[in-house]
Image 1: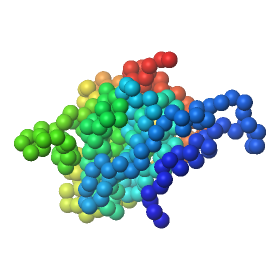
Image 2: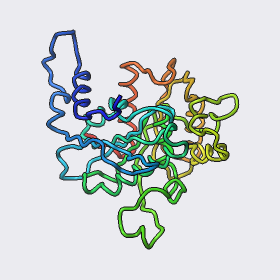
Image 3: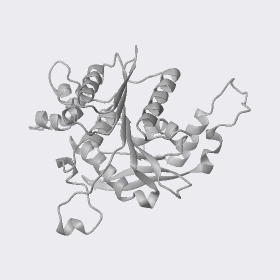
Image 4: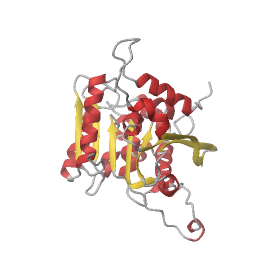
Length: 314
C-alpha cells in the first residue's frame, strides 16, 4: 500500500467525521469551526525537511491563510514505538490547535525497520531546526513552538525539547547558510512547551530487565552500545532548571509506556522547579480515552498553555 496519503483529502474527511451529530440524520442549526476550516487554512503536504539513510524525510504544514503575523506553532511527532507508525495516522490530534488558529507541522521520521536508534531522535531535532530556519517564510512564531506526540511521539516531543544545545544528536542536521563551510556552530532552537501524551521517559528501563518491552528492544537491535545510547535518549536524564513547561496526559494502568515513568518525570520536574502538570486518566491503559476524557485533557492543556503565557485569553 502506498504510504503517502493525500493530506488535503484526509483533512476534509477528518472534518466531516468531527462535525457534532446530535441525532443521526439530523442537522444542527449551530455552525462550527469545521464548517469553515477550508476557508481559514492552507495545507502543504510532504515537504522534504532532511535526507538520511537515502530517505527523504517529509512533513506536512497546516497554515492559517492569515499569515500577516507569526502564528503559534504545534509540531507533532507520531507514535508507533519507534518501530511503526505514519504521520497521517495522528492527524486528529491537530484539530484542537487548528481550531485555535495555530500553524501545525506534522512530522515523519525514520523507524527501526529503516534505521535503528537514535535515528528518530536525530530526525525530530532536524525537523525542529527546519521549522526554525523556515519560520519567516511560513509565518511561524519561534517563541511559541509547542511539541507534542503520543507514545513514542510523546517521548520524541520530550527528548527533542529537553536536549541541551550542542548535543550530539544535532550533528547530522544540515545548516542552511554558508556557515556550514567555515564554522562548526549550531543554530539556536527554542521550545515554548511540551504536551506529552503517555510518552516513554526512561528508555533504558524498557530494553532489558523486568520492564523490558520488545518494541523498545527492536529500536536498538543488537547495537553494542545500546544501554548507554538508551540512557542518552531518555528524557528523565535531562531534567534541569530552565526547561520549557511540560504537561503529560497518561493512563494510570498503562502497560506499554509505564505510568510510573510519568510520575518519576514530574517528581523530578517539581524538584528542578520546572513548570509542569501530570494529568492522570484513571482506569485507562495506553490511550483509548473516551470523549469526555479527551475533552477534559484538552481543557487542561489549554489552561496550562494559558498559565504559561503561550495562549492568550480572548
